[in-house]
Image (cartoon, rainbow, N blue to C red):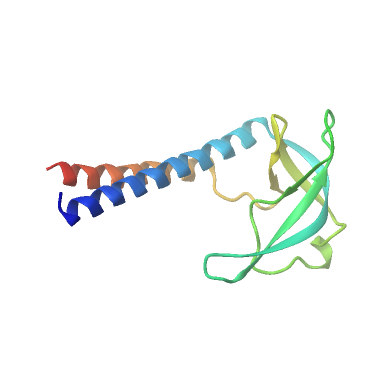
Length: 139
């Protein structure tokens, strides 16, 4: 097997994996949209992390208590490139949509992120790229 074939199969598998990840994100968003409930939460802290470029990202950590459960504290999946201001900092109230089946699956009001349709579309495109590369390796 030549290096061209090894690299081709590598990229086919990589794009296939990215496709599956994109379908997973779409599924998570679908579950949140279909079962999600809105509740008031409180920002308890802001975690700082780095993005792929090394730039800082700030993720609010919110706490809320579902009507039929224990207090949940979870970091928001979407971060901002700047720290929250006084109106959205620690101690502030925020609307949180959570999945009652899995309360750690949340989104904050105004942070919708990737939608179901765009996640599915990206997954199909990436699967098509993976299929095209794999078909070129077979020929």
